[in-house]
Amino acid sequence: MSETRHNWTKEEILEIYNKPMMDLLYEAATVHRKYHDPNTVQVSTLLSIKTGGCPEDCGYCPQAARYHTNVDGNDLMTVHQVKAQALRAKASGSSRVCMGAAWRNVKDGPEFDQVLEMVRTINKLDMEVCCTLGMLTENQAHRLAEAGLYAYNHNLDSSEEYYKEVISTRGFEDRLETIDNVRKTNVTVCSGGIIGMGEAIEDRAGMLVALSTLNPQPESVPINSLVAVEGTPLEDQKPVSMWDMVRMVATTRIVMPETQVRLSAGRTEMSQEGQAMCFFAGANSIFAGDKLLTTPNPDVNEDMKLFELLGLNPQKPFIKKMQPKTVEAEDSQYENLGEKPKWTRPEHKIERNEQKKQEAKEIKKRELQVKTWLKEESEPAKAK
Image 1 (cartoon, helix red, strand yellow):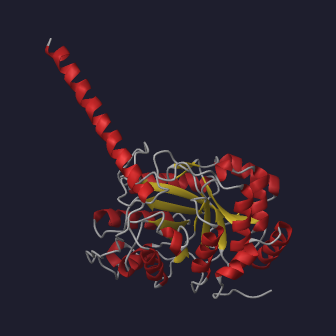
Image 2: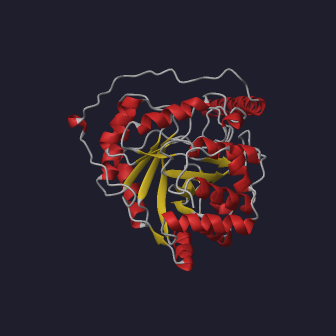
């Protein structure tokens, strides 16, 4: 069996993906057992520390401000709130907290300083800390590393070709540049994507080419099944089959043998048997908790029952990499530079995204008219 490669081609990956299922499962499980404990699964808790109002146009995302999805936006959580949630996650068996903020990119200032303090606080709880905050500069990556960040998530989402059919407000190269900035620190990389957005199998292979040819490969690769949310451009997409998920997990395991492959969004639609097959095929990480940012997720107690049924154990923190040291803000070598990087804004338009944007404007216009009418109706009554 070959060692980790960084020169996979799309044709080679497609050949693996399309193997007879029994052969694919056998090969993936064999690779998995060579590099990992097959009975250990890393458990992460995903926490939305700032929800909604994102300026991006990602076709799958209910947090995009331009769509009407009934997501309640929230300002940045306090450090105290985040600590309480982290303690709850730790008590339920999670070894990692991943904090997500609906930002296009990190901006130097009080809010980023607050996130850095959240990172310091959770690392001191002896938990792995991950953040997904959008694009970030090299200096910002170093500041997160000093605070004690263990991992940074920045998904590629799909192949470079299909990416342009889903997102128009940033370029694929921005994702790669951010990952490169993270690699200039001691922070590990978490990067994966979503299947079920209407992409071809060739696009799934293309995404795995982009991830597997990174050197080093990401330490964690989330495989998400699209959760189609009403009001988003992808609301009418049908869920991918369980077999597609198993093939994607198995193929990812074979081409990235040392990576932790995470079953992420879409697990509420998966049977216990389907999830068990994914674990056999090489998945060894999950998100726990009743919500993934804004979409449903299995209850943590149900996950622990499944673990017990399958004889799986939650992975302890800092098994793959030593716990980072926390540098306090006053001792930091990296300062707030007030950076204002010009991240890519492609010129192309995505028809379905524009259509949903216009529909949202019409809905908001009608809602405003109703509010105005109700206010006018109530004013004469108050006058009496």
